[in-house]
Amino acid sequence: PLVQAVHLVFLAFFAGGIVIVDLRLLGYGMRSKTIAQVARDARPWMILGFLGLVATGLPQLMQNATREYFSEFFWYKMYLIGFGLIFLVTVRRKMTQGAEATAASKVVGLISMAIWTGVTITARLIGLFT
Image 1 (cartoon, rainbow, N blue to C red):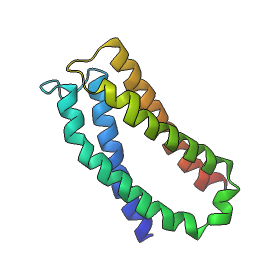
Image 2: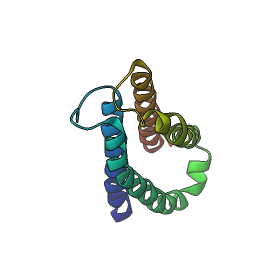
Image 3: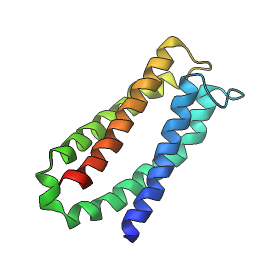
Image 4: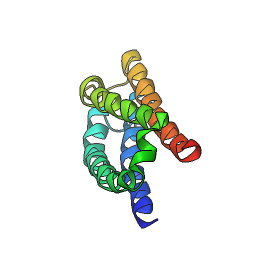
């Protein structure tokens, strides 16, 4: 339970960084700062959160390795995380270099939110159906 609780704390760091930047990409929140400033300020929290998620997720995975391996939701989650990270460091990073929200930045923000929401949903489904 302690590892799971710490995992959720790191999830809050990572997801908080994702959401605040994506909302800024959509043109909402923190309008006094440019998108680039918001992304730069959120980056350390996202990195810390992701590293913490990996560090606490591996022990959870090892505890139920066989069950996780045969769970289709686990693999959906892993694929979405991989896709999300690639999207984060390529398309989304390029879009966060702008000063103001554009139509393209809004699409990128929506796609980013959809990817990470998918990760969250599939993670929850692992616990419910495996």
